[in-house]
Every structure is written in structure tokens, then in C-alpha cells.
Length: 238
Image (cartoon, rainbow, N blue to C red):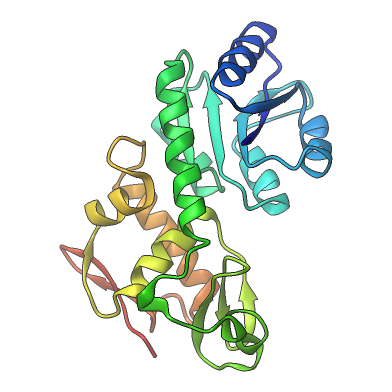
């Protein structure tokens, strides 16, 4: 049974989420503060996190970054703030999706299923990334260049594991599977979120900028992820 951690201090919304998700065969634990949420990550071991951005002991999109540092599970923000700026900041700080209150419970479930499905797919080694398990586990440390460690869900650069957000890894996996192919921003949006989920061109640019900061020696003169002006981006395999 899929475990859902709900961090929501509003008793009415929290109870509605708990009842609905329980009826949909999720195992749900709800807490009302960031502190309790961080504790529950270790004790409840959730598969997905629903996170309100206005909590009694913390608030703001920085919460996404704090929880992303603690876990790699999908994070869906549920917030009263409809601002596009807030959405972009939340996604850039590690959220995988964003829903504005009030929202449809059916839509929430569809979005949860989508991010959980993508997470599950990461556990399957694609044929185009046919590395042995020895490479993905111990061999990557000794390997030079850039590879994907599918077991740990990280990028490995010159033997060093580079931590990424869920979306950054998804973008990089797509690039890695198709070196030299030019991807439009729309293609990257659909690959990372699915056609119905919230993300826009600006968010894609932010993710690519963050990837360059983590991977490139000089992000202003990238060697791995090149901009194709007027179209999008492509990955150059070194």
C-alpha cells in the first residue's frame, strides 16, 4: 500500500485529504507542522509527500528545499497561493507538482499517480542505458565523465555523486538517453510533468540552469547541456 505523508495544519482540509486518500487505498499519516513532518519522514517512511506552504512553524517555498534535502520522494505542494511566481519557486526548490486550493480530489489523485508512476519507472533500467549493476553501484565511483547511477537515482560526474531534484534527474535522464538530440521546451515539459501538470517554459529554464551549475565547470560556457537558440536544449556526451 502506498504511504502518503500529508503536512497540512488546516483541520478541515487535512481531514478531507485523509478520508479521501484512505478510501482510495492509500496509507495516510497527517501532521500539522514542518517539525512533525521531518520526524515522520523517518518513522513513517512515506512514498509521497503532500506539503502545505503555510504551517505554524514554517512557511514559504523554502520548505520545498528543506524537505528535498531530506528525501528524494515526490513532493506535491498544496497551497492557497495562486501566484505563478510562487509555483515556479516551489518547483525550482524541489517540488514535483503544485495544486492551488481549492482543488479536485480526483485531480489530486491523478497527479499523485503520475509522479509515483514516473518514480517507479526510474527503478527500471532502460535498454538505451544498458549499464551493468556493477557500473551503477560500485563501478561508477572509478569511472570518469558523466553517467547516471540508476540505483541511487543520482548523476555521477567524474566519480562524484551529484544530488538533483526529481525534475532535474528526469530531464537529465532524457538528455542522456538521447545525446545530440534537440529537445524543445514543450517536449521537456511533457516528459517531466505530463501534459496536464503545471510547469512552464520558465521552470524548464530554471531546471537547466540548476543542472549546469551542478555539472559544468563553467556554467556560462556549458559543455554538456547546450542551448539551441529558438528551439530548446541538447546534451553533448563527452
